[in-house]
Image 1 (cartoon, one colour):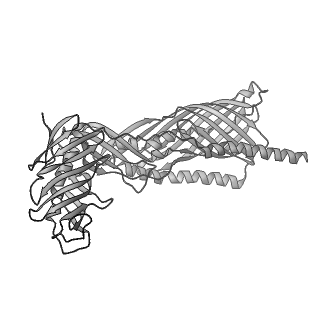
Image 2 (cartoon, helix red, strand yellow):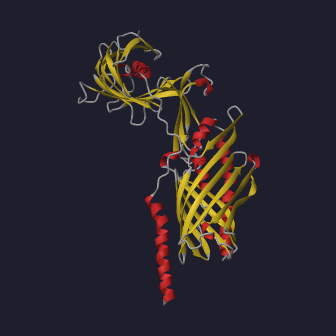
Image 3 (cartoon, chains in turn purple, green):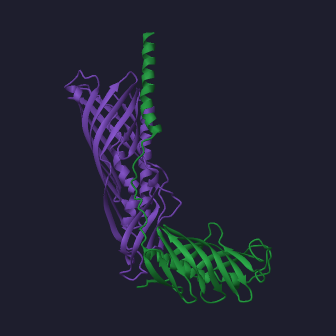
Length: 313
Length: 227
């Protein structure tokens, strides 16, 4: 059942997610313009590696799919990857390089080591990072870089989701956000789709519900970020009077492209990061009272928490 | 009645179910680290000798303050001396008569002095256009007011970015001008332990235990291996 208040809450959550994205994206691009691609890759690592797992979270909240009774659900899924404490800072070392590539006060061919360190995108937003060069264990140059974007150990995301189920034991799910113009950065695009099939369609006597499915998503934040994420999963659930518990296993992958212009020499920077997480186990529970409120934890290389509020009939 | 029981059973089951993710949340499954956490490039013996050379060069500038310092008359410690230029920062001097337990003295009459940097406020040694190393000092010296010389003991710490080291001076003989005429500095950086021997010239000898000998130019800090 859907309530006006519930619909409003879901819309507000989605609106908040949309409203927060442009400001954060603009601020992030402003920061990245001050650093090279090598620095940006390390600085963004907690984001580029958690964005995929976030997208691949909360795709299902039950394995029960009606065989022939049409059901529609819509609402919001909010996910957050709980980052390791170490992910709030980084240190990356490049050994035996030409220091003139990093500081033009050095003659070409001056060899040394580069140490890039500082807060990550989710690190201290008041502390500056640095790029420093070393020759024979002594710092020979140091340049201040950028601060963290927001200090947190949770990499968050929220996205609207809708599904249609009840035809031959299938459930089709989509995620979509309207395009938001980010000015110079471009537009946001969020689109995902997937299909689930209930095995109970052919094995109705099973004591639990089981389904298999897949989901593909693409998220673009202007020209700055583009992420493709996909997941194939099997899940089981057991329904009780007020709640459903569920668990699943997924094979997943994600790829994030970052592109911006480095202000130091106006060069184009672009790199692709393959997500580290390739699989996850999920456990969760869904409260079935008027709306469906679910909480779940997914654990693979990263731990992701999801909360969802779905309405339907 | 049956419906109430069913409801309570449902609530019990619900509570149990919700406890599963809650317990996982509280118990915590830590995420792997995704941001690079590289170690600093490892030092070799040349690197360690270079670090020691930098400190040897710095003490040539700072050490003679024990005999050169002059300032307004003041009997309560400490005096302060600020450096600007390639070495910058502030050192403090405590002059006494006879030794560390002697009465406080002025800079003009003291025959023993302690020269030190404040905690968390090391001297900075400029390297190149924007590089630096940090030097904390806590040294003492017996001062010969007739000859304007001092014999320094004590030590301090060196740091430069991710690198750090410790050092101690043994009977380092300094004068109002010129290079230390004798004594040594033991410098420990990582697994390397070395001795810098001073001889009154602008060239001191760095002997890295088990690895050979280097020569440090006390004017520039440049270190070259002795064949």
